Image 1: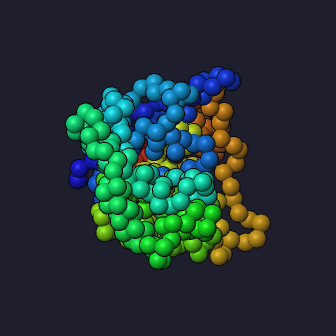
Image 2: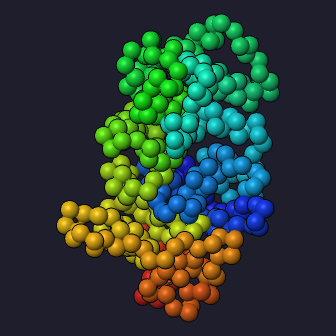
Length: 344
Ligand code: SF4
C-alpha cells in the first residue's frame, strides 16, 4: 500500500531561554493511505510536535529541525516553500485542534469564520497554480462559499445550518463547536486528517458522538487519520494501527489488536496496566513508576531506562533501534534484540 506519510529519523529541538530541549529524538513513522493511526503517550512526549511537523505548523523559532525527513505524498515537506506549504495545508491536510472552546474566534459568526476559511483555501490553491491570487473576493465567491459552509455544517450534524450559521461560537455547546471545527478541517477534502485530542475537552457522551462522526467521515471521504490521544480505549475503538511514543521517539508500533494483546515494550506494558478495568481492585491501579525525563538533559541511550524494571547497563549505551517483531509490528527495545539476535 502507498505510504502517504513517511517520517524518517526526525530530530527536533526547542530553543528556549532555559536552553535547548531535545524534544524529538529520531521519530520514525509511516502512515499508509486508508490507515487510522492512534498516536499515544504521556503529555510532553512529542505527539503533537510529530503530527504538526507534517503540515509544518510547528512554530520556528523556537522549533529547530536538526535532522531527518518528513515525506508527504512522496515529497519532503522540510524542503518546501511557504507558498507550497499553504497549498498543502489548504488542499491535502486537515487539522482538528485540541480545544473547541478556543478554536473559534469569539467575535466573528460561524458564517464569517467558515466562509473566510473556505476562501483562503481557494486563494492558497490559486496562488500555487498561477503565482498570484487571481480570484477577486467578490459577492459571488462569498455566496458559493456560504453554500458550501452550510452543506458542511449539515454533514457534521449541525441542525438547521441555514439559521445556525449566523450564530456566534458562544451560542454553541462544546460538541457543536467541535463539529464546526471538523467541518472546517474537511472543507478542502484532505487526504490526511490530523485530530489532536479532538475529544479531550468534551463530555463522555459527546466524545462518543464526535468519534462516530470521524469514523463516518473516514468511510465517506476515504480519509487517512492520525489521531493523537491519551485514551487507548479510543484508539482500540477507532484505529487500525497504534504508535506508542515516549520522550521524543516511537517505541512500539503495529496493528492495534496485536499491540494491545501482546505489547512488547515495557512502556507500552506499563501504559496498558494503568488502564482501570471492571475487575481492577480498588486502590490496585498500577502506574508507570517515575516521571518523564528532563528533555534539556535527557538520559543517554534508551530514554525510558530510568523508569524501566528491565534496564541494564547496555541500555544506556545507545538509543535502541526499531526492530521488526513480525511483518508490521515494531519495537525499540534491547530486550527483543537479545532474544532474537538476527532481527533487524
Ligand atoms: Fe528497558 Fe532497556 Fe528496553 Fe529501554 S532498551 S525499554 S531500558 S529494557
